[in-house]
Amino acid sequence: MAYGVKIAKGDAYKRAAAKRRHIRIRKKVSGTPARPRLVVTRSNRHMVAQVVDDLAGHTLASASSLDTSIRGGDGDKSAQAKQVGALVAERAKAAGIEAVVFDRGGNKYAGRIAALADAAREAGLKF
Image (cartoon, rainbow, N blue to C red; front, side, top):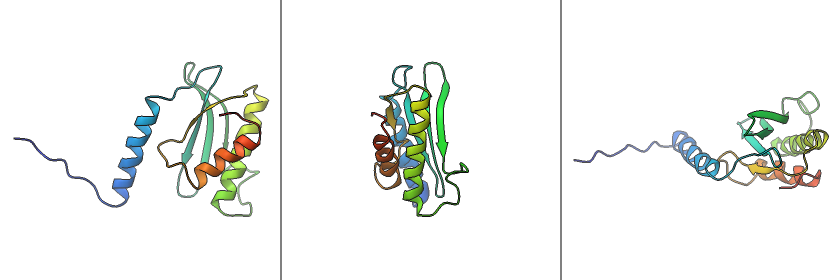
């Protein structure tokens, strides 16, 4: 006899769906020294972006909405995401990184995730 799995409702269902998307993405996306992975982590209040070399297991550059240059700034969360994208691109360029692979972390490519990616592209980072 087969047993059914109870599907969660509400926020738990959304978190489970995001986890499934993240696992599906990470099967295909991996960072190398030539083209590291730009990881985006989104919470309800903040954004974190890291440039990671998966083969060495090192973070090469990072930026967050908790940085002193961004924290407490004017604008909504999308404006802060744009600032994080520009800052991580600037730091990656300073580390000698020209191109990255984008890992949206299971989040849908819309809103703050898209704003961060567009700002990083405008700052000169190639996806």
